[in-house]
Length: 189
Image 1 (cartoon, rainbow, N blue to C red):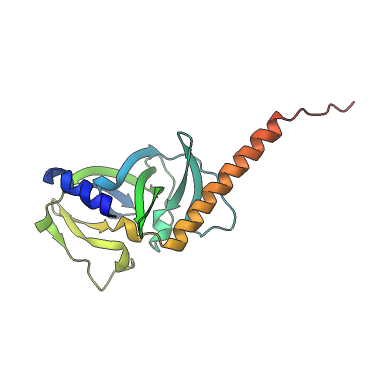
Image 2: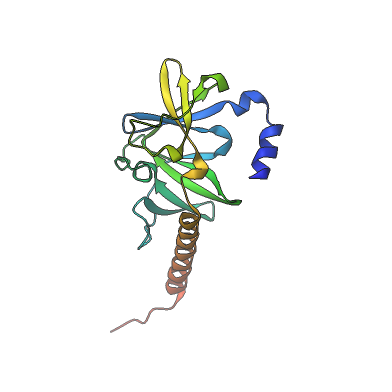
């Protein structure tokens, strides 16, 4: 976490106020742009058995196994509806000093918006169906409010351990499949 603080202190103020805005169903959300590593078109993911419902599976990102979660399910909403605008946003999540790249599946990415600190209000403690533990605040983009997510609170230490295990399982499965493909096959007559 300290490295993020140092990195944030070295960034120009204009960058610190930039948020990636995206949709889940008909609701608008945003995450600080400094946490975003990449935005990818939706792709098939390898499912891993016995994982939490919100974990879609893992994907291979340039040789690295990256777990992918359905942000809708994680927030207690409807699952992301796969369509032509569905994206996987690769984010760096840090929990108690442990960082991991995680793919966050969303319905659509809209824009990068500047949200000044004075345009951010505290998360409401009533009314929504999303736990306030996941919410950093409410930001105003034009005349529209967006929910600013606290990315680091989306996952617990137990979740991180499961995601790391999922990545290891996927790597072992891929390695085993590669070995099996290399084995000479007996030809039966």
